[in-house]
Length: 358
Ligand code: SF4
Ligand code: SF4
Image (cartoon, rainbow, N blue to C red; front, side, top):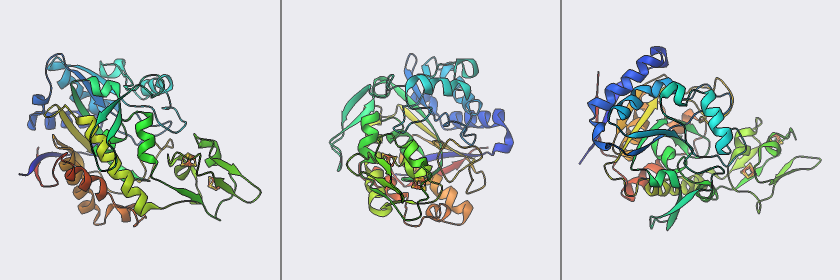
């Protein structure tokens, strides 16, 4: 049976208040209130935008959704986990300060920002999934313990997973530090002769895995945790990755972590993909004004995490008239591994019915 995906057109040109109201309209039209019960601890999974990133979904754009949760008398909190790489979301203190600077705080939203994985990203709960790659996955305890989830993803391209939508938001964004490392462990990277010895990768590597000699930088594979931060940091495309095979393993592992996040939350989670400001790189990139790859489309929402990502991908590729990998200038990448694996392990279906809401 097809899963219902509700969709409303929206653009950054609408302004934050209108976008927020459109999300609220979608919430009501889709009957998503049924996922949430009075006194639930409800995790509102967001991405607050790393550093100076200004293409992420801003806090006022999700206010309508939060007001709906408050009206249902749940106990919602905005949340995101610590990153593997060194940045302003590397621990709960810096992350919470950045979240407040970007408006993800009580003053703006009327609910607190609470990292679910503790001060250092190590507060975790192992969840048995019996997947093809992981028997158990490591999920932030605050996510496992809450009764319901409202996932608010900003759909973008991604340097390793190709697509960053709901599955990525759940699988990577709700995993503890150990869970993230397990997903990234599949990637192997090397540095080519284009290296200029600028040192950026060296400065950003969280594992001290990079050294610089007189000619170029080198990666110590024994130390590398596969976080892909050096890929993002290098402006000279000198960092190389075995994308095809390794991205597939990463994406399949990511889907199994998403399964761990949703275990025990059947009919208790709703997934919103904001398909506006669709940038080539994800919101973890700290620079402002990232390049967009398609005109703004709208917001898609479903109780099926697979259907909402498949519908979103189709909307993006139809609008652009190109495959996502082409839009990212890397035709070795494919976003389908995560979607197809998620479907195979029973997270949802790629068979969807798109219902446009006005
Ligand atoms: S060398 Fe490895 S650990 Fe260091 S930034 Fe690159 S991927 Fe991450
Ligand atoms: S960021 Fe790129 S160019 Fe600079 S040292 Fe690292 S690999 Fe070389």
